[in-house]
Image 1 (cartoon, helix red, strand yellow):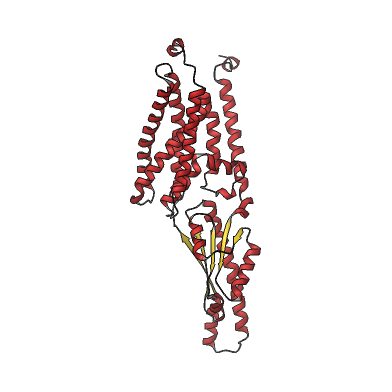
Image 2 (tube, one colour):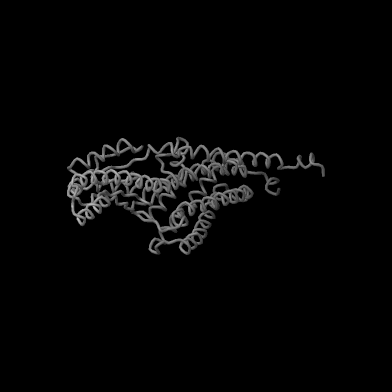
Length: 381
């Protein structure tokens, strides 16, 4: 068969279009999404809690305020700052204790606590770790220099005393890197909230295409509302069974506590059912061609789900998408229940609202766009 006849086959044009469309759309979405890194780092918020009554603490606050590219909150107590950190409303808490200047003047180790929440976007925790290391290096050099100046003023001291003063230089400043909600080592642990969510979403997207197709093929054999109910029941059954398998695999491979098993299962089932109705919107509207729209939306959510960057850093399109699509709420809920100590409920309710909105839209589509029942001839075909 000549190539020109092959080109006339049904589906050739669609294949060419989809091949080009997805290649370009995927590149465009990822490039636009990750332009926020590192340009939007200044949108992150950190807290500096200075309880030191001496000059050293105030000098450090001024120095950090001038050098750090973040929105700095300095009017919080340490307790309130740590609570905000737990809820991922802050990326870092720097705590200067009340005896900081006194310790430095008395030749004792002056210590500052840098606290990071690992149950957050991977970009945030890794960036904060690097920033804390840099701050510690600068402060250590500064304090060692000050201590050395004091030592040089006491020249001609005995050898033993000189050794003690040399040790004092090394211990003039200590920065404590404190981790809350420590995630077990391994990317399979840190990325599990995202992997679980994405697996449910992709499965739900395929199920939506197949079940909506079954709905359309059954038109005329039952009322459209009864068929719509059958689709929802089928989706719920698939959600439960797939979640049992997905959660079982997760607990076998990842380091999770058995006491959260039911919470993770409930979260996964809800995620699947909500994702199904969300993806079904496009399929109910345009049939199998809905996949053309569903895949770019899926790619958008790989950036807007909050696993790699927080919502505050996202550019406009992705920022809005994080509110009205399922994956952000699901990923953050998984993070909260698996590794965090913040409340899971706000994210669960966000997911429920997205699901109810999608279910309502699908019901409207079935009610107003699928009013015309197929003829007997169409049913036989």
